[in-house]
Length: 82
Length: 149
Image (tube, rainbow over all chains, first blue to last red; front, side, top):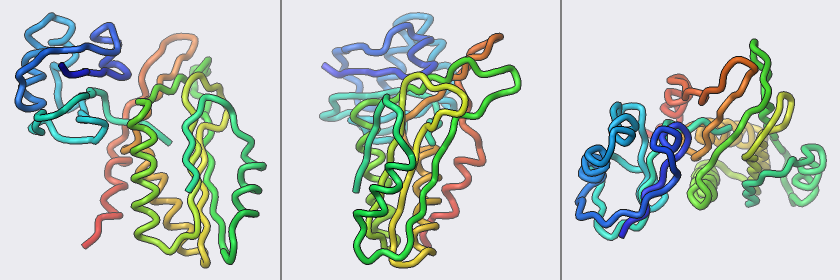
């Protein structure tokens, strides 16, 4: 079981902040494909990956990152702190 | 090192004073404060969302990176989230060093990384519309100047 979190407009597009998913996805990209197949709103949220960033267990990483032992994956737009 | 992520307002003068008085043997203190800017259409509210847990980790890592690159006595970062209004203080950083060059450079480094590597997202609401603030290419480009050879 993995926690999948969404922030900012990704959260708004999907309609809720968190999913708990039983998945066999080996990488972030596999998980995205799985989510996209779920419903149109997921497809809409993940349509343009260049507009998204991903963190695995609260560390920024790339879409080809492994999900082995991952507990938490988060998707969000580029950050705007400061 | 003092890192705080909070909804409440902070007193910049008091924070700067406290930071300065707890330093020993430091000749230079630099502070930077970010303030909510009004927009042409009139800003009703700016909402800052963040990623609890990751935010604190990311800020700590940015501060540790700065501490390893410059000769610093101390670092403070305060960043707010939640609802903010025009003129509100969003965040501040403070650096202390024996000499000003390290303090200035480290403060700039902290700000550059805070902009694009700390998980905060700003949403501006005006009378006409509400929209997420887009990240700027120049903010991402600003990080390249800190690349080490």
